Image 1 (cartoon, helix red, strand yellow):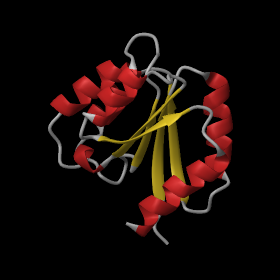
Image 2 (cartoon, helix red, strand yellow):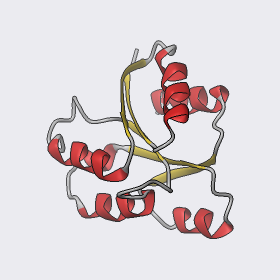
Image 3 (cartoon, rainbow, N blue to C red):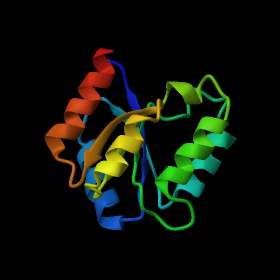
Image 4 (tube, rainbow, N blue to C red):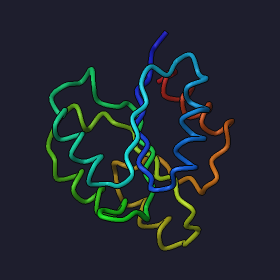
Length: 134
């Protein structure tokens, strides 16, 4: 069975805790890393950009965080040239219901979907299953 590595980037400790617990219960999840802002996540990805076995397969990204928000992260992420980073599937997971934010996200090729919080257990499992079946 294909195993999935996940990166959660969000400044909401409660969201991180609950989402991580749900993901840990799934047999196909092998690794979960969490970061409280985009800069920490980007630094981690850059440090491991050549190590495909360490990089996440799926990244859940909040838009509104201190230090480096999700938009800034996405701008920097697209500048980093690495074949391994291009394989990461990114989901924006945010409380923003702004049509402007949804449209802006649609125009970023590295973003797979825009999910409005709270994200359900069923949605998380669907995302995992979709990744595994592809």
